[in-house]
Length: 366
Image (cartoon, rainbow, N blue to C red; front, side, top):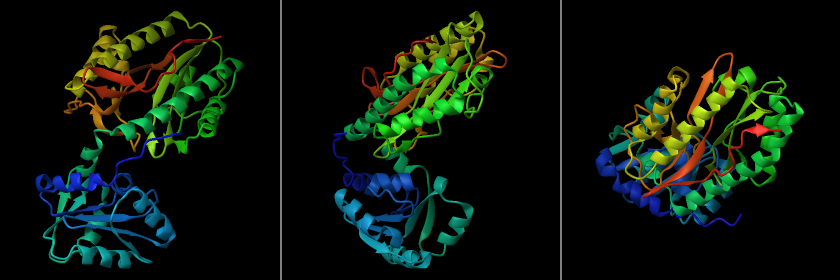
């Protein structure tokens, strides 16, 4: 994949520009997706202290070479401290924070026990709980980020096209899920963005059913929800198909959800309230008398995490902006009948939305 380079280093100055609103003089970043966003580091253990003057990056000996290579490749100038123990890393961070009056913590990413421990690291500095400071920067995706999500979505499209015909052969849900994973991996994905959902017949009435050893039978609806990762960025797509012609009850569910999903997609544009996108889907389902069976929100943001801001829900307070990447995924789940969900991932534009998931929505698998 020929992907454009990410512009990582300038993100640190954007973060510093947010310090005043957060009422901090420095931020201790502990959430790994945020560390990757700010530094390019992809390892499993690190902490980063960003001050007005500089960046201190700490990790352990497993990542001595990797951290140096990745931060240099991202153009990030930082003091890299390799600590054999947490105490070593703590001391390096404390030294870097000398003279800082207020140190921000990622409140949503720090446990109570961690907060109590960190309270002793920075001497007289005041610890301040911050609210999604880095995640707010991540909302608007750069073109290079969208390119990675688009590539992941294209892999998902191709994997679905490869696996879809096997549904007619009576495989188990687990076999289909494994085939999807294999197809995405062999096309260049580094992993799944979440464990695939393959749910057929009565299992399709469970929105997050786990693939089972149950065989898929003729006439059943099958919900397939899956995604993969390309260079850290996730994809997400759901398609519902029928193995042979569906019965009348199943066809009605499909028709209603498809209309709702199309209406929701049409509502996505810069300046739209996320709650209005949810309402565009929910009104169709409510009008069909199926509102009680739409039991989740309409969508979510996608990026370095499979579920990130903004929320697309009836209680959401977000307003969509150009460059946001969101899903639109209404669903209806009726015990004893089955379930239907249709999901696309879209980039918000000024005049609408650019779909990234392009797999056809053809219903019947012959």
